[in-house]
Structures are given as structure tokens and as C-alpha cells.
Length: 534
Image (cartoon, rainbow, N blue to C red; front, side, top):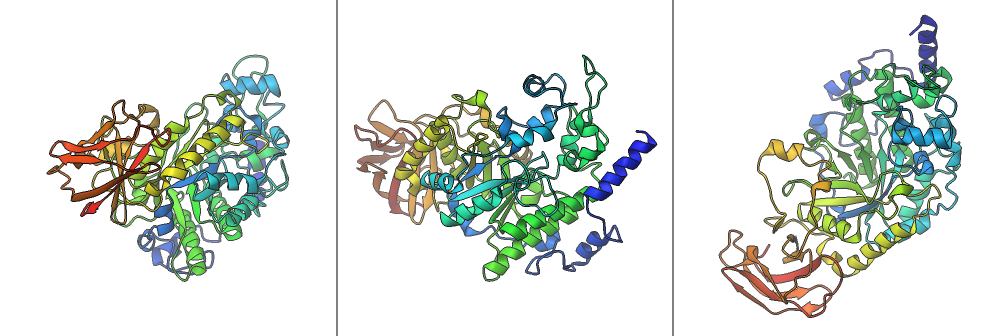
């Protein structure tokens, strides 16, 4: 980089990012001493892991089990799938070719120039959240900011936001208002911390062809406020870590997250990764938890998620463990969450007709709940803000299933084992558990009637069988007499949506006579009454 370019870069950085305190070690000194500084809300927590290990996951989250997410923003306007803002700058990629064909070369028409296309002309937060509540969601999450550095609220620290550009609406604020109206807990997702590296592709240039050597629009210093100032271009390999991220960006992240918390007081703040930037991240957790405690009689009702087990630990965890597109291998010791999508995260018109089926979603939900988890399901909104007909069909299927079976989902806790059957393999190897959970959902096979999943509530045991057998009898071997589970006496069995059933129990298993007509299309719930079952 030339001396002139470097001066321009530093000048722009000074204009676009907050100035550090006089002492660069200001935050770490306060945290190490346990002092609660005025940049966070006063309350029961300080910005240290030791203090935050007193955190208890609130009961509302443990009971909720099912949430819906609108992973929606300017990248949705293109309707060409995930990570468009990054991939459009990677020469030869699918989205790069699409961008050139539709808009022109990224040296002339960059991501910034696509933002006016996001008009959200059919967006109706009240309608959407009413639909999601009907489908059984107990909490809802809005996108706050994705890796594209575009805020979906009237941001104090970023003029690239949905109020000043694109739809001209406070998306987060409208969703929050609708959530409160529908008595849903409200969450916001943050993907910002890695943007410093993620968006570096915008500073590259083609290696071949008619535009070889011509920098993309992200290399122009006047655009750094959107694209960032990262000098190293991470094209093929994105180092998903904090190495090389400057203190200025970390403080900028903190200020934007604090602004988000102060304006919207979320019940849940989702992080796409681990708790970032140790000192700044710990302060954000403390601020979130203390704001919530001040609102709820001294006890925090807020949730923060992290994808790193070290943050969520079995003992002394500071937040909730989140697994992207995957399921943990055993019953997790604390409440946790899977976040997944029925298609791509950002809307992709090529995925229409290829979404997860209602059965796939229901099987995933039941399996996750049996392992002490929650399912956060993204319904990717098109540019307009109105779900397409295929998405509405999936939601309708979930709605119908919940109307019959939600009793065995909401407010439940795990049993002695999460389940039995062909797809109930577990591991006790902690290293394997922690390394094999993310992105493992595509390895799942379709569940059948032999796949049983258990939940409990009060004194009752629920057993979900994930398909309808060809014969009128269902056998659950794990509930036989004198099994390893040492189950108590069974007095009565009901099939939700159908009524009481006859059964026989012996050493080989619990044998249940099913009705001639099934009460639905997907996972069927047995409610089992008795003594010492739970």
C-alpha cells in the first residue's frame, strides 16, 4: 500500500470509528479489578467471567422450546442466497457471476448499490408475528446486523441502516412492537464482530478477464464506512477468529451492541460465533443482564447465545449454548438452542420447492427438545417481506401439528434418556461431542416409527414415535419392566389427539394398541401416566 493510500485509510478510520480512551488498557483494568464502570448498566454483574458465572438461564427460555427468526436484510433483496455481499466479490463464484450478469462488474456496481433495491414493500410485522405465534413460536428473533455491516435499526453509530436507506423503516423496532403485541419474547441477532474480515473481499480485484487488476468498489476509501478497512483480503479462506482485528473495531462493535440493547431491551441477543472481544464482550453480557435485572425485580430474564462450549460450560456458564444447523449428541446439561433454516439463511429463489418439509422440521424439534434444547427456525423472507406460498405451507403444517402435540413440547424437561431406536446413537467422548455437533443436520436420516423421543412434564412422561407403524401395535423396548431405566408403574396411556389406549407391559417392552386412524401426519405423542415415571 502506498503512503498516500495508507494516510487515506487512517483518515477514514478516524472518521468512521470511535476514538479509544486515553489509556488503551482502560477496559481491561476495570474488568481485572472488578470495578463496574459507567459504560455498562449497574446491577448484579460486572464484565468478568467470574461475575458472569453467576448467571442462571431464565425459566421462560427453558419452557419456550420453539422460536422463529427473520434472517432478513439487504442481501435478501437480491434473493440469491447466503453471504451474497461477500461472495459477489469472489471472482468466478456463483454469486459473482450472477451479480455481473444482473448488475454489472463489482468495480462499477458494488454491494452498496444494491441496497436501494430492498424496499420491503409488503412488510407487515403484525401479520408475520401473528402467523408465527399461531404456528407455536414462543419467541421471535429479528436480524439486527449481518456481516454486511448494515444495521436494521436507527443506529447511533452507523449511517448504513434501514431507516436512512433501503426500506426507510426501523425493522428491529417494528418487529419488537409486534412481538410485544403478540406476547412473544423478543430477540435480536448480531453477526457484526467478524465483518472486519468477512467484508475484505470487497477490496480485491479480478485476476483475469476484461477487468483484471481493476479494484472493486470496496477498495475506494470513501466506501470504507460500509466495507471496513481490513488490509488483508480473505478471499478463499476466512479465518474465523479475532486475530488481526484492531481495538478500534472491537470498541466500535461494543458501542453498536450497547446502542441496540439500550434502544430495544431484547430478551435474547444472539451472537453468530463465540462471545467476541473478551473484555468488550463480557461488558456487553453484563450490560444486557443488568438492564434486564433492573426491569425484572433484580433477576435477569435475558439470554445471550454463544457457539463455543467454553462460554456456556456445564458449570459456571455465562450464557446459552447455540448450535448452528446441528444437534448435540446427548442430553445437554443446560438449556441450549439449535438455529437452522428451512432453506438458505438469506432468501434464495432457487430454493423454492426445496425447503425442509414439515416432517423434517417437526422431527428436528422433537429430537432437540428431548435433548434439553430449543429450536430457532428461520423462515427466510423475500425482498418484499412476505413469505412465499411454499413457506406458508410449511408454517401451516407446523401450526396443525402444534395444535395437537404442543403439550409434550412446551414446559417439558428431558427424561433419563433422550430416546431409543435406529437413530439414537450417543457418545460419551466429550471431545467428540463438542466437535461433531455443528452442521450435522444434513447427516440425519428420515425418522420412522421405531425412533422414539422422550420428554417429561410434572409427573407425566411423553413418548413421541416419529412415524406410523404398518401394524396396529407399537413396542417401546426402553419402557419394558426391569429395563436399565428402572421405570415406575404405568397406569394409563393416551395418544394426544385420539384418547386412551390399551397396552401390555412385560420384560420385552411396552406394547401399545394404536387406533385405526392416526391423529395427524407427523410425530405422534403418547402421554404416559403412572408412579415414579419421572
